[in-house]
Structure formats: C-alpha cells, structure tokens
Amino acid sequence: MLPLLADAPALPLDEAGKYVAGAYVVFLALIVVYVAIMAAKLQRIERELRELAGFAEQRSRERAEVEAEHAEVGGG
Image 1 (cartoon, rainbow, N blue to C red):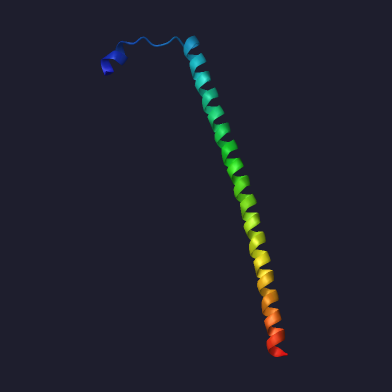
Image 2 (image 1 turned 45 degrees about the vertical axis):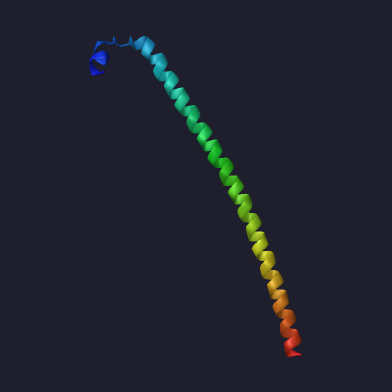
C-alpha cells in the first residue's frame, strides 16, 4: 500500500486548499452541532432537576405538617 501512496501525484496547492477549507468547514459544522446537542441536553437536565427539587420541597413541607399535627395531638 505504501508504494501506491508514493506513486500517487500530490495535488497542486491551489486545488488542495479547497479540500482543506472544506474539511475545516465540515469539522466546524460538526462542532456546532455537538455543542447544540449538549446545550439541549443540559437544558433538559436542569428542567428535570428543578422539578425534582420542587417535589422534594413539597414532600418536605408535607412531612413537616404531618409531624406538627402529630406533635399537637401527642402533646395536647
């Protein structure tokens, strides 16, 4: 395989530059898509975390109310 690559003619710089620029554009597009996907996932995780925190806070309030009622009944 190496002899085949050695015999292959190199692209002239004016033609090779187009391919290099195209490769950079594709790479940059992939990076932008990756960052967009990660941002969407982060937003979803933050939303779910806020929901869970709300559920935990509500449960904590309900538990405190129940304990307060039991303390009133037991102490009175």
